[in-house]
Image 1 (cartoon, rainbow, N blue to C red):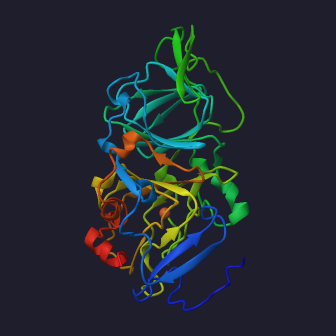
Image 2 (image 1 turned 180 degrees about the vertical axis):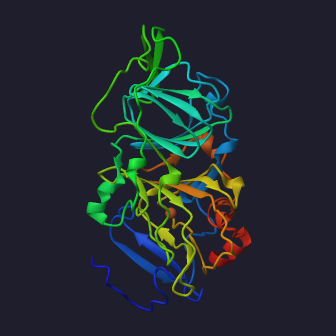
Image 3 (image 1 turned 90 degrees about the horizontal axis):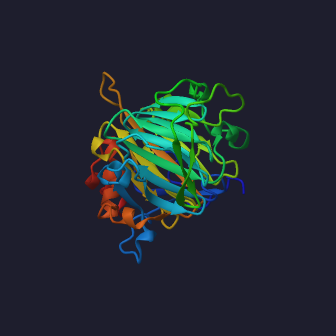
Amino acid sequence: MASITRKGEIPSTPQGYGDGTYVDEVFTLDGFFGDWAHIWRHRNPATPTRWSDERMIYNGLDSGALEPTDRSDPRGTPMTLLTGPGASVSLSRRTASMPFAEKNVDANQIRFYQQGSFRLETELGPIEVEAGDFVVIPKGMMYREIALTGDNAIVIFEVERSIALAEKLQDQLGFASLFIDYSTMELPDPAAIDGDASAETEVRVKYDGEHHFVTYDFDPLSDVVGWSGDPVLYKLNVWDIPSLGSSVGFTSPPSNAVLFAEDKSFFFNVLAAKPFPSEPAPRSSYGASSHMNDCDEVWLNHVASIAPETNGHIWLFPRTIAHPGLKVPPQYPENPPKAIREIKINFDTTAKLSWTPEAKAALLPDPLTAVYTSFYGAHAGVSADEALEHVRR
Ligand SMILES: [Fe+2]
């Protein structure tokens, strides 16, 4: 269907705030990749009054308040937060180095380093990682995290499908992965690592969701002398990803996709603060429209300098309900400019995700309010009351 169809009254541009009379919503299919309709309406379907089951509504949690067993036990495990067919999200708070090498044969991983520093030893050589780094580790590749700091957090996105660079989407969509310089990618270099290369080494194998092991009479992470081929294991950093490209309105995901699956079963976005406006309301706006799509969306507040209490908050915006959005008239900032350190991580997937019991126990109360204090608005200095006044109608 061509996107030139219009019916009824169109009170503003899709990118604009208009005069504030209406709430607008982007309805999309195939997780923003498919057909879409922009809807202007009087009331906001993202704010229901009651629901039969918490799966019907968006919910979030503060990952900094969680205690995965690997926080106190070097042989512990990450805490799984969200699971679904072919995808899951877990949290590691590992404080001590892994006393084993690890190999996940179930899933490819995007290990997002939310907090802390590690030396990541791999079969291809070591890489140093710190907050804001994310490392793609393919199925079957062995690695070991050596903790360099004590208060650590890693958000682990596991996917069955192979992880590809989103620049491949440019051929299909034209607007994805805008100007990402993938040459900032860091690859492991074969190098000697600390430790005894002849030490018996346990490899903890994640297999069909269970942990098994194999042992060697040598350390398989210490004996690489060279490798050639494709970058199968690599590191990128959020501050090397360009921010949203437009100061006039909103460019929807997956325009900021960095990684994705070629069957479009997921995409992984990095979103920095958007530029300040060069166009006032009604044609322009700050924030996102309400939106509804058929993917489940996971969001991680990596850092928000205006609302640091929300750092590490993780949200699931399910396919069951419109996501509230928050649009306000854009304003010029005061001069001189101040640095805004803000990064949100977004993982959209066709996998139907569910919170695990441990995560459910930690969900923030009153999701309709928390969605603004924790996610929408807080990072932009918009109070919950102000946000609710804008959308709860
Ligand atoms: Fe959303």
